[in-house]
Image (cartoon, rainbow, N blue to C red):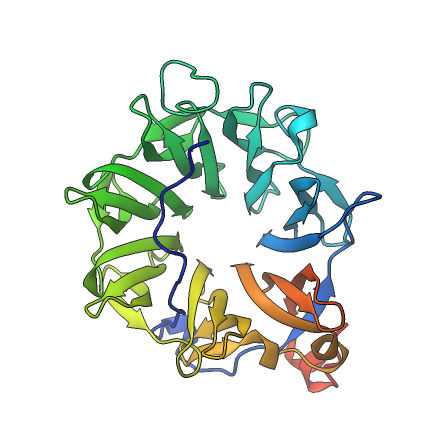
Length: 370
């Protein structure tokens, strides 16, 4: 099976320059930890779950992984969860979820009856809609494959699909049609994020075959630069056009970046000395989240505002802090609630959690967590 071509996944941690919303330099929020329902079947082993998406209403997309396989679940704010259906039910054990919008619609990747892999859009009921690849002829599991990466509130889906030449291309699916976005002069590309204006970000090869971060808008793919090195990759874009991603520096190391049309690409420091991480999401307020690895090898999730990165483990307290170590944040909604994964301090198992922002009055009381 072909898979999207991406840069090494060592990604520099994210920091944000001040925006009007963040200009007050308010203290980072504190959070109440909401644990996910337990997913599993009798005999399951090596079970882990992760909250990989969250919408404005508090709906959460969760990914379940175990020895039998993997699959996404759509959960409402009350904790009731439903499995996202596959194109072919017996193959659901190798599905992956990639995004949820404010309507509760889900983008995912699913095998079909012929073991070809397709991006899908599921609108919360009925059968999912198949997103075809770019090849004209069906090749039984390769050239017609497509993998979803993200969707917006207009049910536009982006990801990677394979063309007739067998090479990966970034695509934008809208109104039932898969559109190839091209490259920067090379042979391959992959889309990773989209905003509600239909602007797309990702990575694409240039004429020298080097993967560069791109912004696609107005029918044109633009190279948004690097931090002095050769390569870069963009992961998410908000409705203000702020892009986060990873870029190589002049000395060959990797650093997180924030890009805007007015300021260009700027390097973003990590959390603490020697840390490195990945920024994966940015909301409309310019708040970003991701995961980082400190110099001592400790993984942790972080939140970023105008004052820089904050280890999310310092923003939970009481029983929650004693029970969980937050290792990765995957998504943040408009309210600032975060979809994440935590490791149990007692058993070492990875579980999906949602970090709910505490109201000021709630935070002023003992933030015991749950």
